[in-house]
Length: 180
Image (cartoon, rainbow, N blue to C red):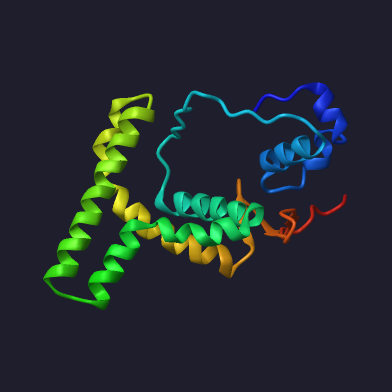
C-alpha cells in the first residue's frame, strides 16, 4: 500500500491501527471515510511464499478467512455461493446419477479451466500452472475455512495466539511476559 503522509495524519496515525487483524483494510477504510481516494493497482502482484508445512498453511488460510469475515461479514457469508466445487459435489451427493455426475464433471472442468486461465493471465510465472489441478481441493478446504471463520474467533500469527473482536481488533491470549 502507498498512502500519503497527510492521509495517515488525518486518521490519527498508524498507531491507531496496531491492534487490528486487517490493519491494511482498516487503513483504507479510514482513509476513504476521511475523504481520501482509494485506487487499485492495475498490475496483479505475484505473491509466493517459501514452502510451508500443511499445518502452517491451514492456520494461515484460517486467519485469512477470519480476517475477511471480520471486515465484511455479510459479503464473506455470501461468498460460499461461488464455490463451484462444493456445489457440484453436493449435487452428486444429493442426486446421484448420470445427469448430476455429468453436470458436476462439467462444473469441475470449468473450474479447472478458469483456474488455468487466471494463472496464465495474472501470474508472473508459468511455473505455478502445474498446480492448477489442485484448485478443486483448495475449494473444498476453502469451504471448511469458510465455516470455521464463523465458528470461532481465535487466530495464530507468528506463533502468537489472539482473539479477534467483532470490530476486528486483536486481543492477545498469550501470557504476558513476567516482570523482573
